[in-house]
Length: 408
Image 1: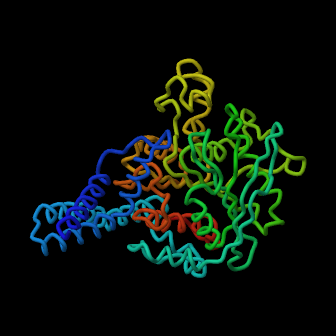
Image 2 (image 1 turned 90 degrees about the vertical axis):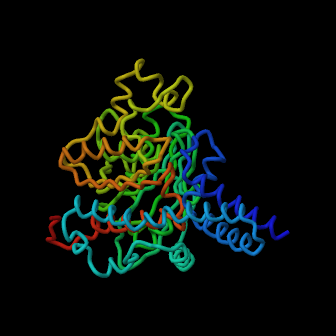
Image 3 (image 1 turned 180 degrees about the horizontal axis):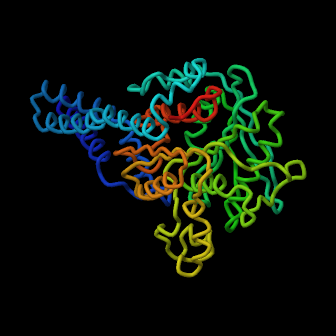
């Protein structure tokens, strides 16, 4: 029995470790292998614990095959932990290089105390924080009904300090035709941000509408938030957009085409018809920045969204690419991308970052060497707390800079 236990622990440890280093499985359509691989990658403790137990049991039973499997799994589990310090340092260097030396000094001390003072190296700290915070959630608030299709949002409030508070409009992913507001573990991200002193609005958009219907819906949400700022004690001049995957594409487009007559927010109520739709910051993860580089196929989501393939409707593909709309004066942008993302190539964020910097836009790109599509999804995983550390500071740098401070 002891030999069997040792073998089982060794097999689980080695397989989990191997899963974490294999090339990424396709994410869509919903793939359980991709989900399992994400869990294995973001939770190396599974390999470490399994490997440790296999080594212990194997040594006691003198079962060297189990010991070898345990050592393999343990070593693979240690690999990202050993690299994490260097990655944290590279992320900090990227923030300093792009925002200026001493950029964190521009964040007031009372704001700085709200978030972690070092990159997290444990899962329990974020878990304790999430369990401790008190956030009020208001679900399914109607903000528009284009073509009779009701669109709703969820509101997360904590009321830290004195208002009015900055607002964050969150746009979910799902390849433009799937997903929902506050879906999966992202509702915990909304709670985290609310506890930092923001009012978070996690929004819906039409999943069945042709382009540019989803973009119009996101713009409507921005205008609705600004029009209802007093209701939620929000500062209408401090609004950020946050998006992931397809939601990142929509967030970038909404931020970079504010008041562009080609992309009107045509689902508005009278109360927000004359409201400004500009935002002051954008935070996006694994964003499709140039849809012309997307591997479009007949029947694919992007072909359905844009009404054809790139060679059939090249103008639509160009207009729907955030990179096309890069120009000076755009809001500061934080880009996050896993280097092992098979769904959205890391080259998309690299290309966008280069264009933004050439235009003089404050831009930071955080690269996660082991990151896959959805790299920021688990706040208690390996990478989630690392990313959240810099997201917290970027938003504070944008919204809470001391009067008269510079960014150099």
